[in-house]
Image (tube, rainbow, N blue to C red; front, side, top):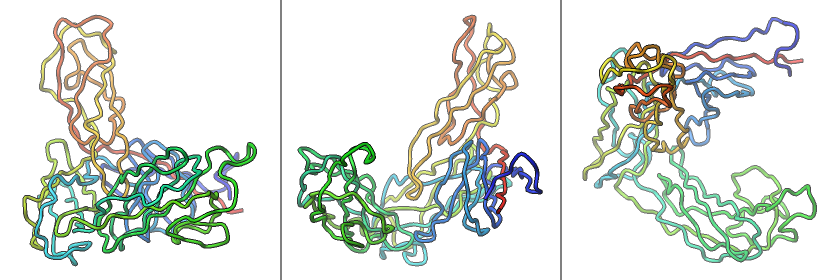
Length: 398
């Protein structure tokens, strides 16, 4: 397989222009993709039935064997990227995953002008209450990885990390309690090398001992049965961690986006509502946005005494939230330059990079002054979706 070359063979690179919120499904084939400043690559997880982020805006992504449906590009500006549950509520009559099972629906208000309304499905109940160290084991030279069984399809898998002291696991942190579990999951302890194995005698050498619960696929291999059959490093373990149980019955424990929507702006951030299934008790959630700067507003205070070319920059617009499937990508600040001596309001400001992933409308300020202004300029960013172009390069089979 080859990507391009010194001479053309009829395999041209293809520009993919996407407005804010638009989606492009990769045609069947193999590609090397240069993502635009607003566009992410995603692949469809056909086990957990959700889209997962593969590459951040501006990155280079190799897409192998697209079937026309399993890889896509999404301009993630002017959209709802996730929900943050602020009140789990109470009273839902059926625990489970999705509106068809639970009877609970999620609403995002009216669609923005010329846009598409966002959509998500709820998860009721089934989060982990915590983890207990039954035995810390011994001779761990580096904190082992912890893997937790997944919930039924469509749920959110729990994650955890641990620390060690004196070679034993001494603390466990449940990073994500998950959602949609119906039974206590197993917690698998997968030891890790403390140093690169190729530099000499490996750390944690020796025959494997008990890793509980077992997931033995081959002699000397202890791992979750749903991971590939790879040879993990061994340890003199004897460690065991168990789940404390399932909690959250009748409450909202998760929400997974099925459509990010299109056309949202900093002034049309949607309210989130819930209906049906008996869920009440003040249940509430906040829409987590992905916005970019379209321009700087004409309001605010017109400054005096600025130097043309002085750079301005935004803040990160509040970094919060987790959609349960992809986590959250770090926002990229916006930047530009002042094109007039009247500060950075309206057309007096040039947007060089609209930034990406703002949860809220970011604040704007200047980085430095060649000459201190006599009156400081203020402005408000106009945020929403920004058009973007990615480049896909078809691979050539040889």
